Image (cartoon, rainbow, N blue to C red; front, top):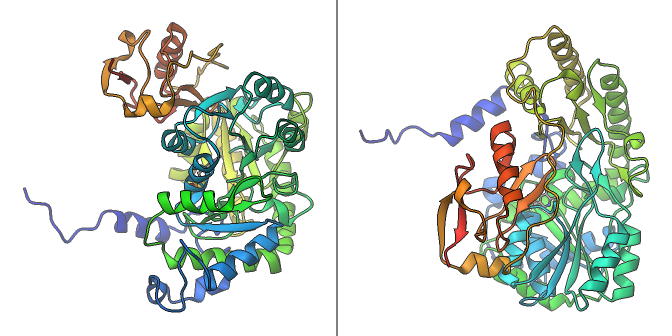
Length: 488
Ligand SMILES: Cc1ncc(COP(=O)(O)O)c(C=O)c1O
């Protein structure tokens, strides 16, 4: 049967989502329009969809309007220079790793880094040296690493190319980045920071300090997540001259498209203006709304919102209150089920869910009405669950799965990536070298990286995760029946 070419699938799905006027508690933070800068809301976007015409500069060698826009963003963030990005923070991290680490040189990083980092490891050939992150009790997700652990790792790995920290993590928690920076200085290793979720931090004193003010050498921010830009629009700041600007520019020329979208670039310029002129006031309102939401949700039986009290005693941690991390463990159901129910029955879409939690992003485009709808829906769900209405197969999810020691690294991710590969059944993979990355949520820590040996503990862990139906990221076979391994 030929496919009917009249039909559009993606377009219809988007029209439906938009038409339903869903409550958007997810990124992009402009919330479908209200948080977009006025210039973007009123601009003739089809007319702006152009390329490097006279007067419009060139992203790869900026000397005109793009250079001027980048300079304004650098000034707002106190950066030495800023690069606009059209392929998200993903490409920024990959460029920084490529610019700082050579083949086989150590890149020190937490085990819960975003999967985009793998691209940087494959392009550069760097050898990852992982640090175990702290797990936040009760909520069971991975946050940052402790400076003491970094000290030990840098002593064991002299000549590391860079340290990469995540600030804040996906759940909005920050660690002692100033302490991390001090150690990097002492060892003369540049500090790269994935601040994908922290574009807004610098704009308000009620939020944790941003990475550039804490001394980072290079920072990448997803302006589309919490800064009011369009999806994919990010920027990369260099804070010091420890990383050569030309190396970063070269890496971005290698990795970014030769046809950057001027709509995305314009959205960065407009978002910078909005943040500079109105950011503080917008965040004042948002913080008040977030405080009210947390207070109301904490009153609902079976729910708890992440607060400072949950971070006591695990290191110098703070959190971003505009990100509501809601534990649903007290309801005896998984976060997946509650998120599904919110979407299907109430038209409320949160940013993410894991076995224990929901994460709702409140940002520049969030309305009070939407947040109150979330509170009301959660109260109803709590009542229902209290009455025992659950068909959730994650109901009995085990509290914590402990992988123990990290698997031995046999080769770098790049070598594993370039090697010949084959698929093997999970149960027959013992002793083989993984060619893929697999992470389970929660805690969001990679179980196995390309180049690592598949140990009996890894197989046991993956079998448990498979049985529990925990969300898996990265695997070529998400059902985990097979693994992709290096074919030696
Ligand atoms: C911690 C973290 N880093 C990096 C990224 C990649 O950012 P982007 O989507 O802007 O490429 C993400 C995306 O969700 C992320 O959560």
